[in-house]
Length: 280
Image 1 (tube, rainbow, N blue to C red):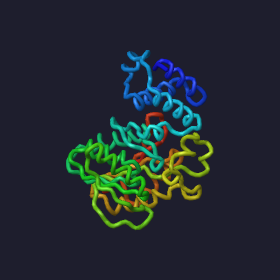
Image 2: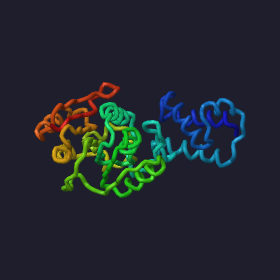
Image 3: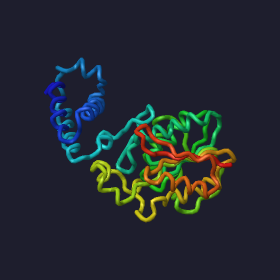
Image 4: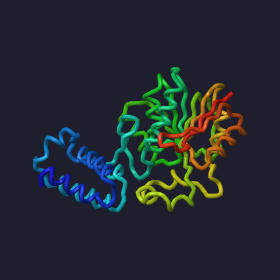
């Protein structure tokens, strides 16, 4: 089999599970994973003969994608904020919307030596990206999942940044600390929303990091808001990713906890996605 035939096989195999544009993006990722080829290499090597292992790998990837397994888990990595992060089924796959959250924080915080806390760090993508982008920041990150923290530590080591990772549950009492920035992308999807989600998300990504009870959709925000009010320095900032259904409820909760300058912010798709506030 030559590369051109392999790409045709991938196109045919993905036709039932992805739109043409999405399939093309997947093929680029697969070629990079198997052959370490970028788009130029693919264009120039159409007639190159493939080794047997590559043919078997392509067949395996197609089979797994047709079962709706996320491609990022298959290849073991995802791009986020200009860098490659290891991902496993122990962590959520980083989303472009969350990149916007990181950009918002970086744009609004130009001072150096800021103390930052990422609550529910997962793969570490937010904490590590902030450690790279902010000037001499001291970044802490916590997660309840030991397996997720193992992935996050690997990512920090691979990207050569220092982040202090802690195994901790924000729903339990936390020791007092002082921060200039607290950020969190906590679980916020109600269980009654599960059936409307794509199979590659609801069947493969960790439910512990996604879902909250239908009768308590602000479960994590009820813990994060008072902790932020206790731990943020005067003028410190809180940034949250939120469920678009509950923007006003999150705003009210932050107000009740003494936070000020509260903004509910849309993502690039026009969906209510973030909340930001200042400690006065």
